[in-house]
Amino acid sequence: MDVFVWEGLTKAGAKRTGQMEGESVGAVLAQLRRQGLREIKARKKSKESRLFARTRISEMEIVAFTRQLATMVGSGLPLVSCFDLVAKSSENPAVRAVTLRVKLEIEAGSALTDALLKEPTMFDELFVNLVRAGEQSGILEAVLNRLAVYKEKSAALRAKIKSAMTYPIAVLVIAFIITGILMVFVVPAFADLFAGFGAQLPMPTRIVISLSNWTQANWWLVILAVAAAQYGFAKAYAKNDAFHFQMDRLSLNLPVFGMILRKSGVARFARTFSTMVAAGTPILESLENVAKTAGNRVIQKAVMDARASISEGRTLTEPLDASGLFPAMVTQMIHIGESTGNLELMLQKIADFYEEEVDRAVANLTALLEPIILVVLGTLIGGLVVAMYLPIFQIGSVVG
Image 1: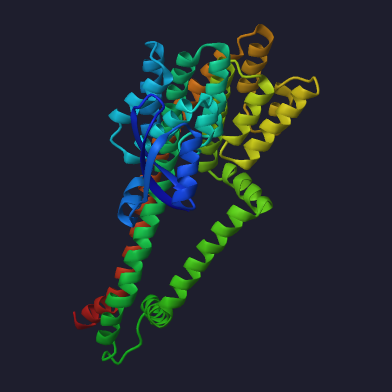
Image 2 (image 1 turned 30 degrees about the vertical axis):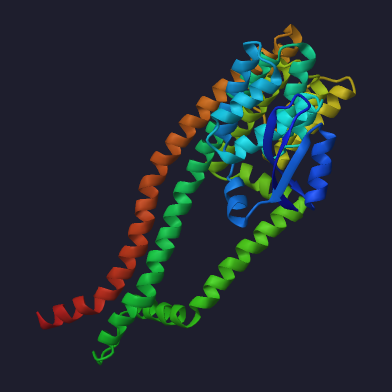
């Protein structure tokens, strides 16, 4: 569908502007009339402005939006005014456009949650469900503040996991590129030099030259194979549920990295669950949302098993303990929280503890990887250099 820029007047005569996706100008005008607007004008956006309008909305921009909205709701302003002020204060055109569309929906008589549901790019299901619970219980401001904290913590946790994974991968990619350059450009120059020696080259040198010759002849095949493998993996991971599940299981069992992923999974589970419980969401609905935001199919299954256990009248901790993903301390604290009615507090303590554990684990991983990566790079690059200089060393010793 195309994107249209429009302007019109409300029933009270106030001027409103915004943008909307639609199949045609007529479809957009009809939808705006249903929202109570009159004297509407609409035009299709240019490709340049559409590209600008689709600026990505970051997690921290959602946090800022949520905090601003909570402050304004707490001050007693009407929702329409809250969204209007937030839109004016936003520097990101995508956030501004979404906020104005939500404001128009509310002006047309839609409930806040119904308006948010129409903007899934900015408001996920968890966000909408928490807002609904806050509206129903009359604690919307408190829920929005909790949502902002939750989003901040989640973004920080994802950033730590990303940094833990990115560092070794980046170093390996750089090592691969450097090795490729040596094989394609440096080794052939040495091979031409050694061609006139008239003596058999050392075994390491012959192996490196053979690898260099193969790389020069088949470099396109290597790139094609890597690209095909990456594409095939991404396609299978996205489309094949069984493959996705097995890869998620494998990731949790990786040396060192698996431990970090497990701890981050526990932290995310506890933080999301505590936020849902604090908003007054029913346990079964809370667990369903926790499962959807787990980020790992294996953890998602364990949470859904726990949900099924509760729906059958059993406890929450039994299936969590049986999954083997949650440490005994976690299940015991949850059991205590269930028994004493302090489940929200216990979940917050679990989340805080495991977020700190992830911090320490990432720091330890970085300290551990640095010497390992230095040894690997030194062995790889140094081995190639030594292999190329061995004939020169031999000639020097003979002449000496």
